[in-house]
Structures are given as structure tokens and as C-alpha cells.
Length: 314
Image 1 (spheres, rainbow, N blue to C red):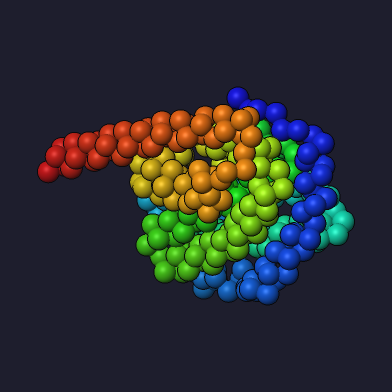
Image 2: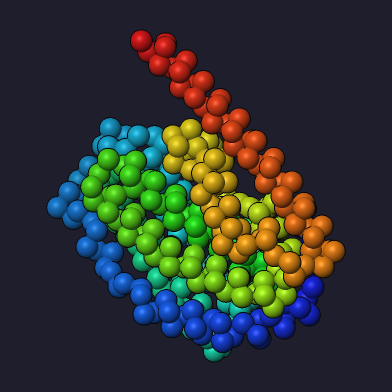
């Protein structure tokens, strides 16, 4: 359940954050590295499909394990839904000034990810391209579900989401066993890291302007977190495969995504909260304790399943 964030406060914060956005946009542009999606695709492996007289896709053409293939599909379809994300943040942040410039730059950079991933997967025949296209159409027809509301929730959620996506891409690349695939996903993860820094810095400034309401937005983002691709077909089944393979699971989510950002914001060290903010912080701490316990149980059960499987195979 989400707690309400004051509307008038969000309007004020949006206005007061303009110079912070400009500063972080300039920082981003000074360190962002341009790259070309086509450079990360092994075009020499490509060949025609049946429509042009070649061979259509068969499962044995993929060199990826099922969990890695599922992660690749989830990652790509998440990037494919960029028009929905652009609409959401452009509506929330606006199209003028530094906010609008950031929205457009972020969208342009994110668009490279889907282009590069699709070309890589199709050329290497890592996934069924017909199934991939059907999933893309279904996913984009749904748009986004449970999207954040208002500037504060968008800043908080996107900070966590960018770090989660960075981790998912990086770990997926390492799991491919393909040097080119690993290099491509590392390059995408580097983009996501810069996006994380922008949203983390901007949300941190919002905490200084409106501590209580920003903390409520952070609480809403953490307690209700879903990856942006959660509305795509078979997401939950694929998530189980991905978690069991160790690419992205509750342990990683707690240790490598949620806690580092909360520590960066010094959430549990702040002394500028009212009684309302203190209550929200206590609720957040209670949830994090339970999340930690759930993560530990998952890791233990996964290890038990793997041990049983090894014993049976032996």
C-alpha cells in the first residue's frame, strides 16, 4: 500500500530542483561516453531466415542456457517499452528547461540499449525472433503498470530501478559465456550507472528540500518495488529462472540495490524528520528486516535444491 505524498509539496520541489537538475545534467554530459550499437554485434554470424530463403530459428541454435535466455528477453523487452517510460517522466518532469533536456537525453541513451540487444540476439540466434516480436507487441500494448506518481516517487523509484537494471544487465552479460555479449551488456550497464547517479543525486537534493515527503516516496518505492518489465508476458516465470540462476534475486536486490542507495542518502542517520517522517522511517526499517530474512531463506532453499540436483545427477 502506498502512502500519499503532498501534491503542493511536489510542485514546489519540482521547481526548486531545476538548478540541481541542470548541474547534474551538465555533469552527466561531461562524463557520458558515446557508443554505437552496431559495434557490439557480430554481424559475420548473421544469415537469412526462412522468409528470405534461409533457415528459421530452432532451439538448438541458441548457445544460451534457458535462464540466461530468459534474462536476455526480459532485459530487451524492458528496454523496448521506452515510449511508455518517456511519456511518464515527460508528463511528470515536464518538457522545458533542464528537466526537459534531461528527459530527452535519457530517452535517447536508453533507446540504444534496445537496438543493440535486439540486433545481438537476432544475429546470434540466441532467442526465437518470432516469439520475441510477439512478446514485444503484447508488452508494449500494455504499457507500464503501477507507475510512480509525482516527481518524488519518480525520482525515488527510478534511482532504485536504474541500479537494479545495471546489476541485471551486468550479471546477464557475465552469464552468457560470450565475450561479445558480456562486453555489450557491460556497456549498457555503464549507461545505467550514469543514469543512477543522476536520479540518486537529484532525489538526495529533494530529501534536503522536503525530508518527510521524499522519505514517503522512498518508502513507497521500496515497499512496492517492481522491475519496469513486470507487465511483460511470463515475467514471473522468467524471474524465477533468473533468480535461481543467481542473475538477480532477493539477496542481490537487498544487498546491492536497496541498501547502497539508502546508505548514500543517509536515511537512518538523518535528524531533519518530523514525527511523521520518523514513523515512516521505522516502517521502512521493519520492511528491510523482513526483506533480509526472505532473501536469506531464498538463498538457503536454492542451495538445498542445487545440492539435491547434484546428488541425483551423481
